[in-house]
Length: 309
Image (cartoon, rainbow, N blue to C red; front, side, top):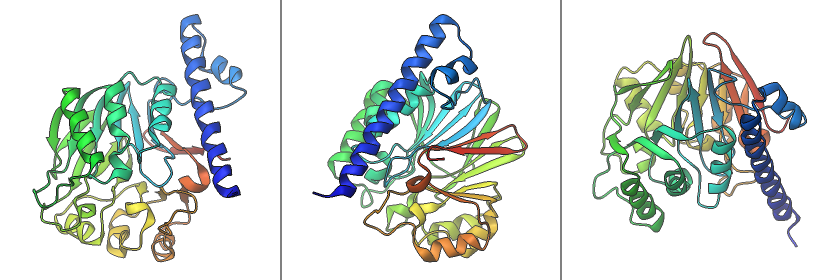
């Protein structure tokens, strides 16, 4: 019997149970008018991150070998990707625990299943106003069942579909986010068709890059985008084909986040990418080690906490 697999399954069950407990307690507390301090006491000190506690927060949700980022700002929500098939419950429970009722924006960075696999279930449960995603050519368009399910869910949601184009800027509460890429739509690999987004709240900023490869990173630089950020969500789970030195230098992050699965089959994050990142900063957080990672900003400084303290 594979003890590692049994451990992984146990951890997943425990995480799902925690999310369910948090969601139930938040609902009960809201009925009886309890404060957030009361809620945390009921949960035995487990932090509760809601929009009312922090005017702005970014949540890097652990979905194994996939990507999922939630941005909360002034009662409005942006979800960037939703992980692979099989992690839908993790995402749904996290959103419920945050008290999310509606998603103002969803960004599907690109059409690979480890980024859009959970989105059909999210769209089925949560009203969504806008969905932003790259426009693919016919040759680039996937034909697999995951992408088909995603398109059906998008259509059924009634949300406005927006093509990801550089320069598009949107408000989210008191924050704003700008689409920086893809610059062109002629990439052979749809990783390099990823929607790259910069989120700004006050003087703090977060750069989320999907699976953008070196060629897209260089195109974004050449297009004159302002990449400077406090937090970089590292491209392609820390693959050596992303996070080129020019891109890291242009972004100059103080903090990096890598979303990847424990003992994944791809060897992510790759040593070469990590070495390049460490030349910029030693503050690197990984979901395979930290679990869920939460960053709360007051517009000037960022406080960081994570699940596996």
